[in-house]
Length: 314
Image (cartoon, rainbow, N blue to C red):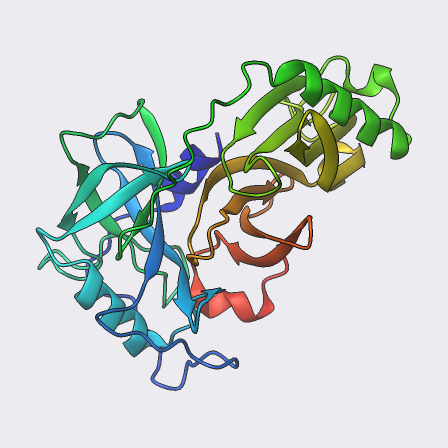
């Protein structure tokens, strides 16, 4: 639903939408070179996937990308050449590659997309999935300019994520004074993630989410969004992250798991969530594990109009 709404905003354009030369971000600019480790979200329809940059490793740390108009053009030229390939990952596991079919400004037809009233947008590329990629009709992958180290942990994952997941989710709900009747009608998801975190190297995801975004209709009535993470220590679980948002549906911040992978090379995955409110622009939330807890490292807005981000409060 979110991906479809984003794609609906992207329209063809006759020429690159570049700002005036003095349209420069107020924060320090990211330094990019041909050897930079840059990460991309790959999303959309399987037949015509889109590729958009969202993060980079700088001095061993994962950070968002901040560039001026010339910097974004350089990124497009260096990493979106027609015929170029990027490695794909799902849940930290390599899953083939994607070929660049068209860069942002590589075609005589103009820019790949534009947004209404926007002079500068985050560059994207159109791709073609490689023959070894396994994917459904709608895709969500991570892509990287440099290969990600693959985990060698061969320990079997527990078969049951639902029972312990519900136990954790119900405990988090109770502590937040969310009653059983408030979550009984919500969709529950329990999943094991091989993150490298904790004594067993695995994290349990437990989440209640309202697929209707409100008990009186989309954006109307009351709802709850709950997402918890816990590490396994020989069958005992310590909750390491929790998000609980409840109340009027329009005010609730929903969160869902998008992907996870070790992006900064420290041996433990970063977890990517998507956070959104009704009728607002979604954000990618990057979680980092340290000291037995998952904490929010940074967010990247999926508002790809860069000349409005300075004052964008979505």
